[in-house]
Structure formats: C-alpha cells, structure tokens
Length: 373
Image (tube, rainbow, N blue to C red; front, side, top):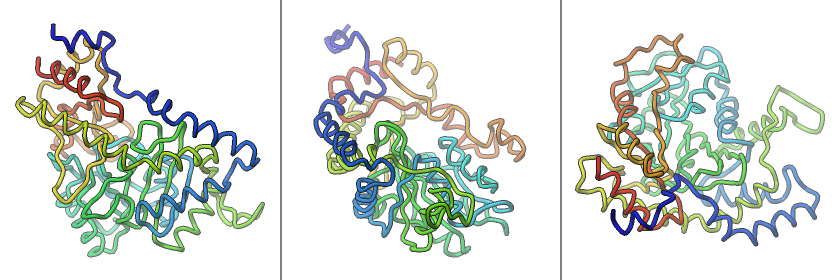
C-alpha cells in the first residue's frame, strides 16, 4: 500500500462543500442577518442586484431569477410560446429535466445523437431531425463543456428555429469568447448546490437579450400577474429566494477563482491518467470547459466503479441510460441502436470527484485506484 493510500483511510468524497462553507461562513451569516433585518424576503434588492450582476458576467442583456434550473427551462419554453404540436430537438445524454421541461409545456422532445468526444449534441444529427413541426433546438453544455454553438446557431437561423441553451452545468463556460447563456434566445442555469455556481438550496436563472421575452418571464414566474392580483395567464410560483440571491452574489464575486480551481484539478487528472487506457474529457481550443463534472470513458466502467467504491472514492454514473430509451418516452417509439453514440457513452462514462478544495494528493490517490483497472 502506498503512502498516499495511508493518507485517505476514509476515501475521497464525490463532492464536499464544507470547506467552501467555512470560507464563506462569515459573509454568509452577515448576508442572512442583512436580509432578515431588511424584511424583504421575496424578489427583494439582492435578487435584482444578482440579476444585474449575473447578466453582466454572462454577457446577456437581461437575467431573470427563478426557483430552479428546471423552472428556467420550462419558463423559457413558455416565454417563447412552445407548446402542443411543437417538436424541440435536444440530447438524450443529459439530466432528465432537459427533456422533461419540453414535455411539461406540451411539446414533443426529439432526440439527436451526440459527439463521442465532447458528449454534446451533434449538429449533423440535429439537421437530420428537423421536420415541419420543429420549433427549437435545446442543446446542453454537458458537464460544463460548451456545445458547438456556431453550427447550431447557423442551423437555427437557416430553419427559423429558436435556440435555448441548457447551461445548468456550465456557468462560466465559454465558446469562442462568448459565455454560456449568451448565445441563444434564452440561457437556462441551475444553482443546485453541486453546480459551478451553486446556492444552499434550489435556484435558477434565465438570460435573454429580448425585452419582450424578459417581460414574459417576469410575468410567468409570478403566477402570470401583470400587477398584484391581476393575471393575464396561468403562470408559476417560481422565484429565487432573497437569501439565496445574497449568497449567490457573494459566490459570483469569486467565480473565476472557483473555475480556475476546477480547471487545475482537471489538469492534474489529465496528467495522472494520460498513460492509461481510458479517455479523458476533451474541449475545443476555442472553448473554456468549466468542469462541473470530470467524466472519463472506459470500456470496463462497471469494474472501475466497483474498485472506486471499494476504496470509498465517490463517483457518479452520469448517465446510466439515455433518455430516448427510458420508460417515460416509450410512446415516442425509439429503440436501441437509434442513437448509438449516446447509448455507448451510457455504458462507458464515469464522473470522478472534482470540486474546489480537492487536493493534488487526493487526485493522485484516485488515479492510483483507476490505474488498477
């Protein structure tokens, strides 16, 4: 047993937020006290300030804070008038909320295959999915790796389609010097605690450069109201809590440091795993991967996972089954083999621990265990 193994008898967690919390504790407590003293708990000054600060960082004209990343997707689709009879092209290799939002507004998800290296939706496959019912493309910047938005924007323009970015895992990611959330009609973010920018609960954000879409989003997030007790449509109760907005403002000031830490950890992994028979994450030279997750590919993924579990090393199988083959979408008629790249990835991908505060010694220990397989 190596010295490094002796150093981690309790293993390595998949995610730990305690170190971050201790660093933020003083400011966080002050923020809670400030919100409490103000008496403004819903749609207060911190929400407005965070919306302005986030929009400026992302490079969008507007940002509208909502209750979750899922709500961000649903409200964006509603604001763009998506509904029954509409088809929206998306990826099957993503968290369920991406497709679920399409279903929740009454539209039909159409699944395109993904690229084997980036794990992102394949523009060539998107082209093949377009019909006279197609209204939008919904790419995901999976694991923090920006999708190839240049051809996707061209496709959307050529076919007069909306383009909605699912940037839930990609706050701060960049494609050709443009930040995720600034390249489509809407950008949708999640602030679930595991995300690159996470709050201490649920939270979400929608970015847009359209004044009309912004106005509709503000209406939709507050029960479809145009003024107190006056409603023009059925909306949602989807508002970011003032306390969470106060925390997000604190964390946004340090977001570049956080992303730099994730990218450094990814570099340690890349170096330690470079001689092994597996595939590490890739990113275009023109892009900035935010590394919400560090996901490798290995043909013996299940054996690798057993080895890591035995050593108490946290890991996640993102994702075990592509969405087009799940029971919820059996009515769409997809069968095994329809989207071979996504299906193959679901048998080979495994996400390793990555979070600011993970040490190089811990990374090396993880990689030692990976090497055994």
